[in-house]
Length: 271
Length: 271
Image 1: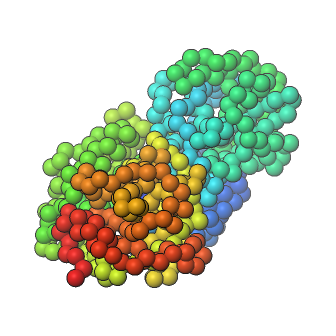
Image 2: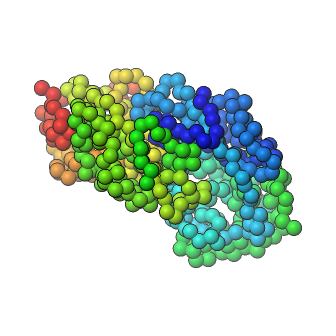
Image 3: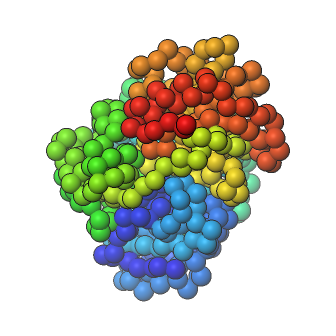
């Protein structure tokens, strides 16, 4: 196990930069305490099982917490399979490499209150059940999708898979309320299973569903969320060219799910 | 442009290790001269266009050639988008980072002569036309597929996409002869467009086809090839559990395509 934080980077023969052969976690820290830490550790452990990378001891994963000061910060942990192997063939006994950064952070609290404008992305996610749900280092689809717009007024882009099912946003999960029921897209074929989503699924009656984007015509409320930014109500949905498809007013329903999510993250609620 | 060879690696904030946000090329060098260099440069340029990464000047890309000595070697070039951006959003003006290794190399010449045993992989490639053909750094599918077997007798694994069409092997392209005609899988939905494949398509009447693996029941000859190893005749095809599905004897047809490929790489032919 080779573990270090700033300023060490990756050696030339590491399989992370070579193949994206690894995993990452982006963790909200408050006064040095990680939020949803159990969920982050569980996702990392699942990723290690799937990829065949030895999971570092918990003490190793918690070493970066000593670098955090008071207030809010984000810990970015990257775990690669390390060096070695012959081409794509992984080494029989990988020695994983752990790197981290602790960065100052302030959430976009204005979006909690006023909600956000989002758009559909043109890019379709490839279907790959073997990697679905993992926060692995193969993120070119997210990069290409995020590059589809540059106006600061558009907060996120929604992604469908190659068969047309709604999956996620570029760095957030989706939640909606339809006929009074909470739903979120299934993530068994692609997408990242966010830790905030995991925590909400464990605490609330949220159904995982497989639906095309037309479902959004019928939802009373739509949210985007992740474990760092919290939950954003969506007030406007655009097509991939930025033309409005739908508007939503923010309702007490929006605030109810935000209250659940923000309690998990230690965030306040809009007044 | 930040360019260097061994021993520099990647800094912690580079987008290559973070997201696989980059491209690579693996180039055969003979006495310091790159083979199929025009094809490698063309693929890298196409990848840069698709990903929006500035293409380094040719002089930068050729600096590593000075590190090569006499005889055979392999140059591995990795080009990332560099540091910066906010999350997945690429920086408006990326400063790409180029790293390389020059490694001693000897091709598996016994496989040229005696042919190889290959197997079908269980993993299916996700369909992603936006990235198809590129040699980008998101290679977890190849890593997982290559991890499906460990016996040294099996040289490669064949991959189908999620809709069941045959695409490639884990690090090689496929070619076959059917009713006297040369064919290779289309790569417009996934897979890596190898430079040896490009060069053969430009010189010979090879048809690009979309077929399931059942086509292999009907082929007179099957080859695997890339720009480093040359062309291997396939003499045995196994299912994903290692049980033989088909055998082929090596024929003059096998040697004919090998002669074309090996002329491009400067390799000899089996006696």
